[in-house]
Length: 313
Image 1: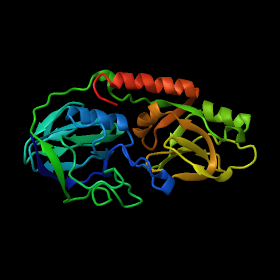
Image 2: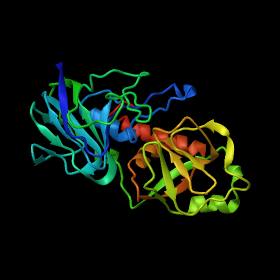
Image 3: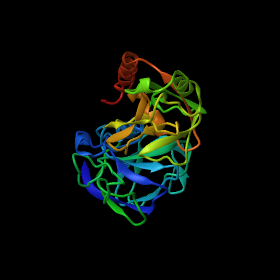
Image 4: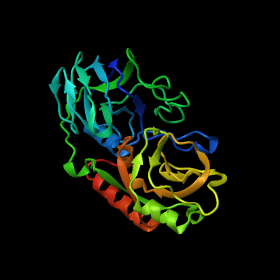
């Protein structure tokens, strides 16, 4: 049985936004996709509360929000690990949690990973913009009033009173490593880089810079050498495209990336590894591993098979 209720933001945390799988089909008009940085955790959270996989959730970043529930419902927390509490009592992640009207959830601070996803049974009762409820911060559109959540917000939810008891199998939970291996396929302008530049890219350890956000990750590490120059005629970008400007340090396009760019594209992160990348934060380290397009497709197919055991992706 479903009804309409509300949640109230008592503390918004560092950056909490409403996100779904994104705003697809509009990049030719200059509209970024946006959406969850870690779609795996978003979909798993939705499974725990019996939502469709692409139902909008709250994406929290490092420092989680405090939320009062003004209705009875079921929730789930997935993604970055936190010491979450309801009414001051610790609660488990990656499973269904029943809450009553008046209960207060403290998501807590992430101690492994970067982004935690809060799913609420029934999702949010807010307008869709271009077929999505995702927040695009730079465009001030989508989500709740086109912005990050703030103190005092009361957000309508399509709450559900059904009893759920779902727990995510451990093999589907995200992995957090000291140095994360990120698989890539060669980019369109890979031939614009010297042999030494490509070797540096594939053999170095890079650190995510503090100048990183939902739009892109700037990496610090061994500069990548171009043969001539870094500029190209502005061309299309996708989430996971890796551009290399003239200074030689790569930039990975993330969920809120612009639709075109004018720097050489050395590689693209494979689709299967984008959620892993979305859980990384400034200071984290990664290494790139090249695979063929065919291998990238096989990896994605195998991943979908694992997830189809419990959710329809």
